[in-house]
Length: 390
Image (cartoon, rainbow, N blue to C red):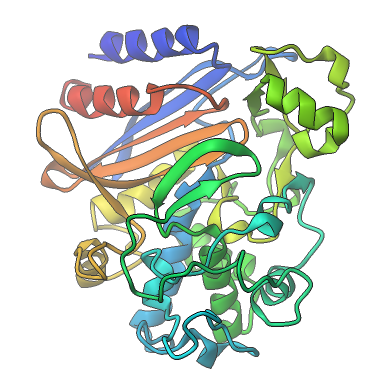
């Protein structure tokens, strides 16, 4: 029942002092229910709604994976060929130069490329100053401005499962831990792969082959490509460690324009600027719950505006790719149901998007705040539990 969903979300907003949330449920290829809670902009008292645009973090990776798999369907990309074949430079883990880094290994986070310090330091207010291809090349090509043979690559070989090497975000969230081998730069490289194969920018490719066909007309990758008046302000939790870093470089906190460090107090919320990073295909899709639902429906329902063949989706969800699916993650609900999806985390952003194949139901959750405890998981459970009653 809707009242049950309301109680869960409103309870989590209060428990963790989260500014706002927007959620939606997809069934049989369409958005059947959506609602906003709290504020998209606390200062201006702008409500959060299903039409609110927000950067969705790593949920964006499902869009990038879709673009790559479209090229695979057309025979333009071989998942098991050395990815360097498609690039104007060689990409090699210097610790394992004879083992190929392939598109499949980039998609399933088994590439052995690592998110090094120079990656985490690219976060900055506004749209990226560096072009995607230029930055990725500088990070992965020997002699590049950001190349570091030790920091940018894992010790293990591409394709190898190494449970003792979790991915971490040491720059923005020292306590975070991600699945073994998880790599954001790898998805930036996949976006650049799309550019090299098609001869067009990644943003234009997505507009022509994903967003426009689905009717996602308010969706984009850059701040300049979306209506900022509809864009949520995202809020980060203020900690003592954050304030210490801010006293050294306040811009590193990604503060909203006009904000000063003296306005921040530990435990409170800090409004961020509209930030970005050069590897945007891995985390910076900017869209609303209403429009992301159109994308989710293409996977969960597999009808109407299909982006990929059903056989391709089945292949992506098969855990035969070094023991993993391609991009999408499997989760088991408390009632035993299997759902497939992805989460997203960035400063001031927590999102999730999942679908349940057995009844063609999907759910989307946005929070414009971080440090939210179990809120995403609790809301996803509630949405799937109550979907049939809405």
